[in-house]
Length: 113
Length: 114
Image 1: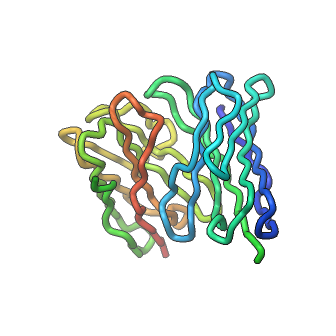
Image 2: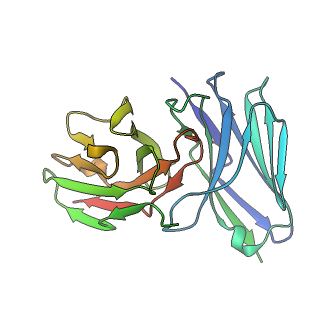
Image 3: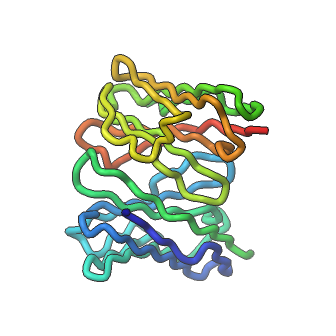
């Protein structure tokens, strides 16, 4: 069945440094790739997404890259700040509104002061 | 605009008991999702509704879980009887019609089965 693998499971970086989280997906029909941030005890919130007709998208300190041939996509956070500490989930889904969204297992990002 | 509402926020039950969760999506959102999030894992889709019809329930353990969305607005998710492994946060999400990829999550219900 469809699967999304996410690495690493935990990541600790120095404040101000960059953080990179990588995901691979198995369903070649996937064409929408969102990233969610979930703070402790709170709901997941969409922070950025990318569609298969785009290779890269940037929003201030956050960027996402997509390689459809290799079926992997990555989240890049630059100039990390303490408030970036959270669990980040990648996900993948197909084009149809009826297609299922599959989440990765999450990356716990900690920013060291 | 008001977000997705869920109740209760917390529930503790003993195994073999029954429990029900309620979700009120954002007004006008046609698509509604129920997810199960076990501690340390990503959300797993249990069921997806489009208006009051089921689009996908392939991962719903139908021997004990049921869900309905009467009138295409509010939804309830029921577990009967509960097992220890059902302990998780149950998240409801909704999407605007035609933009099913943009999901808005509710605060979740944390279920503990003892």
